[in-house]
Amino acid sequence: MMLTGGTTGRRLLQSFNYPLLGTVLIICGVGVLNLASASRTAHAEVWINQGYWLLIGLGVAVLLCSFDYRHLLSLAYPAWLLSVALLVLVLIVGDVHKGAQRWLDLGPFRFQPSELTKLAVILVLARYYHEKKEPPDGFTIRRLFWPAFLLLIPVALIMRQPDLGTAMIVLAIGGSILLFAGINRRSLVWLGGLAAVSSSIGWLFLLREYQRARILAFLNPGGDALGSGYHANQSMIAIGSGGLSGKGWGEGTQTQLRFLPEQHTDFVFSVWAEEHGFVGSMVVIGLYAVFLIMAIAVASQAKDRFGAFLSVGVAVMVFWQVLVNIGMVTGLLPVVGVTLPLISYGGSSVLTSLAGVGLLLNVSMRRFSF
Image (tube, rainbow, N blue to C red):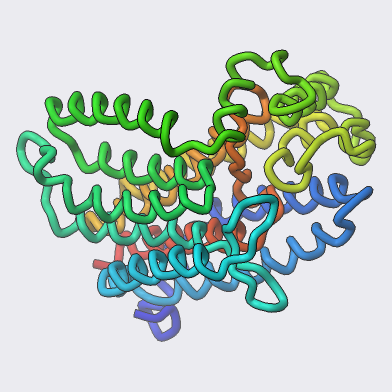
């Protein structure tokens, strides 16, 4: 069902969720403004490039609004297979940067397949739980083997890159969708125990040395302030120096003197907090809160389970990324390399986030259509 054409097209446009889009555009504007300051001393054109990616991403969002989202049911498994194939490909021929093999070099730009995986996992799990109605007592362990397979295969491939942060986000997305689907209480206890055992095994055999060092630095921030704890310590200095109202745009000393690492990607919130203070930080957190509330409202109003699970998937994708990113830059969580949606620099991240927004708008527009 396309947007154009007669009464149906007008009804869809009347049902368009303008407040949701407006909130997203404000977040994008904050991101560009912040990157313009963060990149004054290095990476001079990143805010311009970010603007281009945002325009492309908005085009993708519009495209995803132009047809009935139920057509995506037939594309869920192909999208999952494509994402797994790309993850395998990146391990074979991917571009290595700072010891990690996460990108495919496509000539004029690099693409990060693990970002696509977030949407692929949302799509395939939304289809699975759409087709498998919730049992009266909830899903049991036995009935979770297939969705666990669909989730853990891409997570394992992402861990091989290695990319602990993205692997955790994909795992959190799948776990959140599972909780929304409804799980048997006994099975939930078993899964909790399994998660604890898996974490111990992961610590011993799966995590790289630098990843363990970052977690230890989180537990003891002053233990290696110039080594594994450097990123978190410099970030907390920047945030604390912002005070109530901040130092002003372009006046952040931690940022402009380049003490703050990865200031245009993982630690971009630290730049904003230093320059705009506690008040500005709460504005950004408030914008994300408004977005999440509206996303959950879209899920609650969806006319079928597929639309509801798609909306929940996008909502938790943004929620976990915001929580982990702000948690790690404020010292509340270990540094694991997770970007802040629509504010951190990165084409793959921007396209994934705005494609998710397009799915939300699609579900919202068609809540009265069938």
